[in-house]
Length: 550
Image (tube, rainbow, N blue to C red; front, side, top):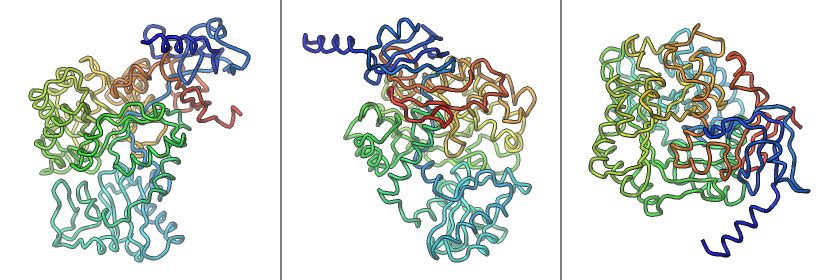
């Protein structure tokens, strides 16, 4: 460090704090000082964490003093697996979350059609046939009769299946003679005619007919999604699979100072995108720490709810079906090798036990070919694991990036899909944790609601909001509250190579924190989901303030 730089650093440290937070119960997620009463912020970073006396020693005449009257502070929450543009789009399409029947779905689409021009696409998201009295996949007939003049594309809650009407099938040229695409399936009736349900790769056959969002629409979707996340205490996400067009919008907004989120971007893994971003090289902490672009997303299989997750043995409720492999082993290994050579991280979606084993095998082969000491490769979801593969995550230093709220959404029907024996290897957080790995937590939003406390609650109870089942679903797999807090703060930071910048309330790190109206570390489990965010602070600046705190 030059003498000039050292002097500049010294002068910066002598400047008064911009903000002092007092009279708080601060859970830092820092093992060296787990709990504190006050903190100070200077220049967007934590300057001090500890006692009120120490924090006030840094205050000056213009320092803002924030007395929290005993409220709880935790580090900024990070969702380790999210889809920002998916959320933005969901906020502007027909909301099908919580529909209790196919008739309810059709009614919501009909209501939207009344305000839509003929021929214009109607999109929706969130239906789940497992929540209906009739849990079979629907057919397009009722939807086509109700909305004949608009093509309709309704994405299932997990994003791995869609329901479309006859108009959409007609525009895409899908007929009885259309073959299933690689890594996808058209659900068909007894005569072989497509019923309107598209699984995994089949979605693209119809989806490619939908006009792409303009840059202006992507901007609107991004800003709406960020505001929604800030409202729930989220200061960061790991954005799973973003196109170059989406990244360009993110960068434009960040340059304008309109990006109140830290986004660890996983780029889509088509060859042209890989080539472009590998030429550019890993991008770290762009635009005052708003964007990191150094990871790649692949998808190895489908989802369990739509029976597309790749299993070692057939589905218990669909004999003969073992799910779908959507990316070949050879492709996974080749991208892994490219990533290791170029300094990128590879994150692969794998839900079924067959897909997880395949991904671990290809990671192992790639690491044998290109040994890297600190690769931090990830498996996204890691939902269904064969017991033999659980220790391999630690052995290969692979991070299982999981979503606790998936367990409480899926537990009602998982035994039907897998049987009880395989269900014991589902959402196996404690078994994985006992091997020494970290488990960054996420929501897969908009698959699950944006509220991260749903995942916190699921992690420590393995129960739904009504306390079902008593004692928790496979309760031996629960995490402690301390682990649950780490799973949405420090562990996502580690999984994104950001542990020196964020994840704990420690001097020198970004001043990202959340003020809650109750103490989630001590209250009864039944109160966790009633906890509300009072303030969300990013880089020392309030990006969300509840109406009750105004």
